[in-house]
Length: 296
Ligand SMILES: [Zn+2]
Figure 1 (cartoon, rainbow, N blue to C red):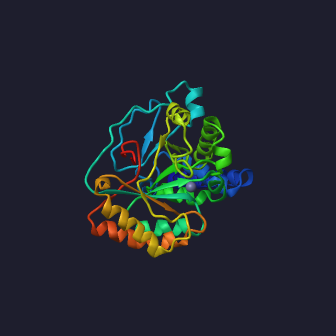
Figure 2: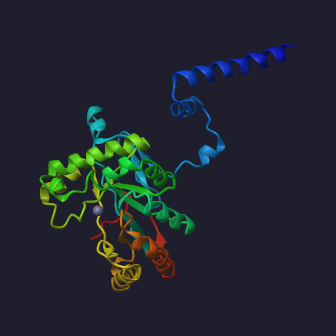
Figure 3: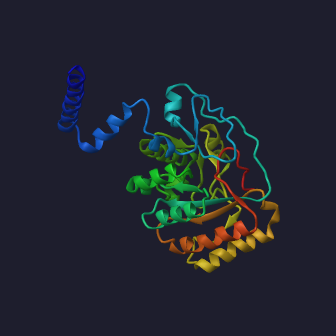
């Protein structure tokens, strides 16, 4: 009888709580709110968490070359808390035959999911440099990239050269703005960034100083797929194969520039062959973090 009574009271309580949640909160908000109160997440939820490093207050983590790393604070939050914005210098990690595939200008509703499916099929991770205006349109794709264990980098808010390269301040303002957008989606933000069009010809010493003082790690590339023009899949593959074969001194840190932004279907088409080429050559695929050697 006692057992029956307590069972009734528990189920009664659940019904009342559910009703209160239902009438006071939109359903889409009620679900995460209820999940947050659970002290032990379901096993399925735990195992689906991405395998990444989180930089905390002092930013003194030394990542391995295997995982993406994200900061739990934006620069503005660091300043408010009087925390350091500059990362300690970490020695680059060089090891034979390492390739870093990087995809710029996404997320894109057509190309990015296809790229993610190809990467998953091949059981490899890559790095995505995302543009703020596109992140705002497709936040779910950003979540998917993050949850699948790829690295995310900051590729500025609007990718417009005449805005970005007015001054170091306008440039870093766009990075900070994009960080805030990313943090609103993922609760973390990247420390790596890539200049639209590359740093060469755009960055003066003042730009490098501004980036350094705000803790950003600028990431270039040393193998260009040539997919920014109207190249066909076969040209993209040939460009990559040619530069990789010729420049053996890059084999311990081959950083490959590709695009998954709008209009880059040929890059997606080339991707399985690009991966096959590197696998056949004995390369291992890695994501970019603070330990990745500079491109040059
Ligand atoms: Zn770009």
